[in-house]
Length: 231
Image 1: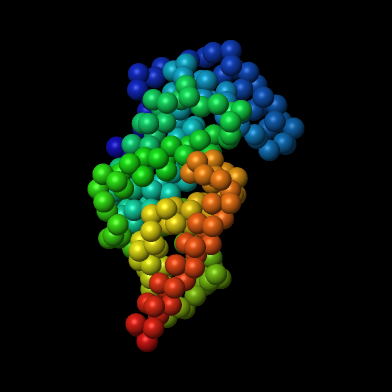
Image 2: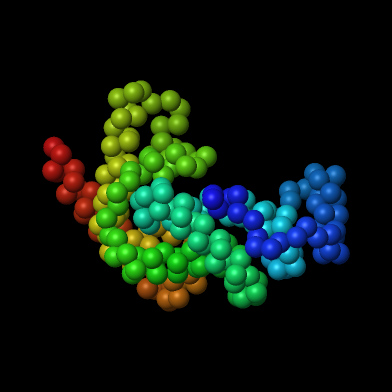
């Protein structure tokens, strides 16, 4: 079952006062033309109260980011989807541990995802990427990173070259050590800032910056080696 189709275990549809208040604020914001800002602490409380609509909203909003992180770490679309499902099951069973005072819901979910990926990595010892970068991005509605540079409409030759480059990047990334790889992924592909990455990994910001720098250098070295090999 796809993670975005998952429903909360034993959830029921409730019309709690909190939910009604949230709906009232949403209607007011729409009437005034203001952008909607979701109060995730309330959404979490509603999930804990068994509100299946709140759970669906949480999964729908965060599914792409969780899947993206799982795919970019494993390189395999099927494995990434299975791990994404596992992540949301873990999130649901640990909702009571979320504390907005200690960080945003995004950081908390990213931390949960990272911890599960580390556990899976240790369990499987899988350090090889068997899928291509394009397969993973085809599962999302986002542009592939390399395609952003040519979104105006590349020629068939340029498209083929970009796909080959994307494949080389993914293969090189898979050969970077796990601790450096996750730092690079969180910064350059997930767009987290240093403070957020430090929260996710449980390490000082200085260590985060060091790992990112070393990871980028290692990735560049591997890409340069691959480039020489194909010339």
